[in-house]
Amino acid sequence: MRSFAFNIAYWILSVGYGLTAAFAALAPGRGPASWVIRRYVKRMVQAMAVFADIRLQVRGKERLPEGAFIIASKHQSWGDGFATYDQFDDLAFVTGDHLEKFPLLGGVLKKLGAIVVNSCGGHEARKALAMRAAEARAENRKILIYPEGHLAPVGSKYRYRTGVWHMYRDFQMPVVPLATNLGLFWPEEKYEKHPGTATLEFLDPIPLGLDKDAFMTRLEAVIEARTAELIAEATGAPVTPATLIDTPAK
Image (cartoon, rainbow, N blue to C red; front, side, top):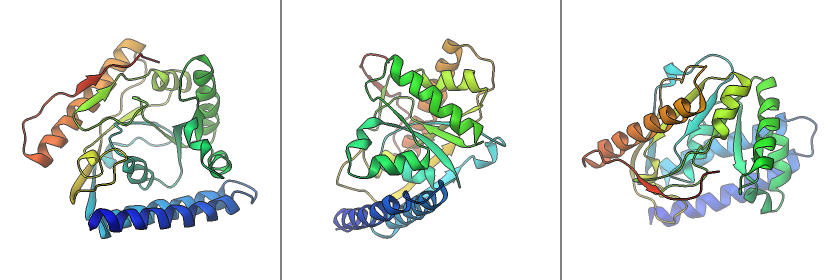
């Protein structure tokens, strides 16, 4: 019943706020559409607690640097975006162009200043990522990116893509790794939800100046290690390293 109730609430909120945001996107500036989306995200997090009995605890916000920075997050659940977006007043986010297939959503994403890249990767995707990230950096906004580029089932991982390192290097922005176990409670995009307390944990920022190999090794190591610990903490199981889902690196 919890899953059914939450999914009804999910679609009511998504359709209602989606249409409202589409109209708000017609107004000048980013403010009106951004205000609607922030309300949408907050209501969705509340619905997770009320209907699905999924509650969030957030750790490590005291580690966040001042000014603009990049959040590089583990991505286990469709709920990750809601949970993370709700922690900030003005967050830019990197997303694949598959979202533009939904009616009216493309205009909303553009107005929000979302960084939309080709889901297939490649040179054009990196170029678009650099251009949109530069705009967000100029506005002193935080940027959320999922380095794996995929929703990974709990206990699994994809190869980490290097787009986050290019932003880190080109814009001299610190990167804050984010670990989570939300996938235990809202698995990927699945219908069923499981009650409990999910954790988001912001980890120590990665200092500027690392080369690509050192940066990518450190980023993946800290995110995957802490994510495995959060999963073990919630389940009472031993800490188990994630299994690589082998896909071509992009």
